[in-house]
Image (tube, rainbow, N blue to C red; front, top):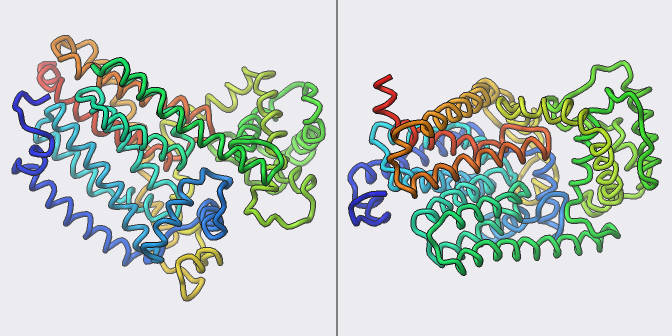
Amino acid sequence: MPSSPQTFRQYILKEADNQRYLKIAAAGLILQLVIFKILYPFGDYFSDSYSYLFAAITKMKVNLWPIGYTYFLRLFHHISHSDTALVAFQYLLVQCSALYLFFTAGYLFQMSEQTRKVVFYVLVFNPLILYICNYISSDGLFLALSLIWFTQLLWLIYRPTLWLILAHTAIIAIAFTVRYNAMYYPLITALALLLSSQKIYYKILGIILPLVLIYSFINFTSEESRKITGTRQFSVFGGWQMANNALYMFPYLKEFPEPPANCKAFHQDVVYFFTRVAAHAKPVSPIDGAVYLKHPNAPLKHYMEKQYGPKTDSTGGIQSWGSVSPIYAAYGSYMIRQHPFYFARYFLLPNTFNYFIPPLEKLTEYNLGTEDAAPVAIYWFDYSSKKLSAVSLNGQKGLLFFFPILFGLLNLVFIWIIIRWLLSRAHKEANMSSKKALWLVLATLLVNAGFSILASPIVFRYQVFAMIICLVFIGVLFDKLKQELQLT
């Protein structure tokens, strides 16, 4: 923490170096955005994009995915119908959130100017963020909310206030409605509050209030799902994901135990698929993505089609997917409990390797390699044609291929440098707030990794938040260890 009485606002607006950073950021971000939109005039789409847009058009209260981004689309539509305006807003929101973290880290940890330059230019002049924010999906919005959430955690350690607790609660609640990855955020927030010097009743308020809001949202979503599917279920997609995760181990099982009674028909489809359809095919792993969710001949979609029948689903998939999701959740849970070793060997272990070099997945090509937009996108953004133009449909793969490798390297460097710091003289001499904050960084990255590995096959676009945290705090720790590293 700075020894001077300078406020954070004064630090940003009055220090000459930071004024220069703000000017460079303003010019650089606008210039990059203009060039990018000349090369990619339209937003980027995949299946999730059309699901969000369908829910926005039909004003649905629940969707296959968290409904928060759909509400965001509807709100932004009152401002502009332009996809360019939406992408620009997402991009500037993410970059402003990253700069909020950058200036906070510089202020609280007194980063050297040399280190700040490196971190600043990597954050601001980063083509990855442009591609992430060009998606008509929750990726950009959730990344921005996550960066704000994490930066506020640091302020809770250093300068906890009631207003900060209330603002932090709102950010967690909004983030949770946008993507369910935020379900571990209240845990990290509780740790930050317990480590803070806040009054005990403020700590209790800060821990309980996010849980109350999240519970209210879960209850609302479950009830809306019941109205459409006939059963209370918080995440229609959750059962599908659990069954998908369990099926990776199925080709290696030596016996197939009887599942719960309501899962027997689905179990027969699973056994038939792996003993007949896929018997001679090469087994897939999480590195291949959520194969069993997507493949039309895999048991999940095949069984849904049999159960739901030929009738049209006018709810964007909620009714049809939701009709079988409870069965898939029960089946996946049962199989994992029955075969924990196989699940660990064939899902968790390969997914752990995936975490360090996550697949680019949809980032390898623009608009899934096609030049057409779906009717919902044409309607929502007032396109004059279904044709989408771009400088290249797959050129971004060559530009972004190194980022997953870089993410793995940053993780390894962070592990090495945090161990060095814990064993160093700098750690012994550091003030208590710095120690607490850096322990919080470590806890956040560990919990994020654990949650990601357990939840679903890893993809790179979900790990950009962790990548930015690694980058910034490698810089912080490097500064703290600079003298000792030079001595060795």
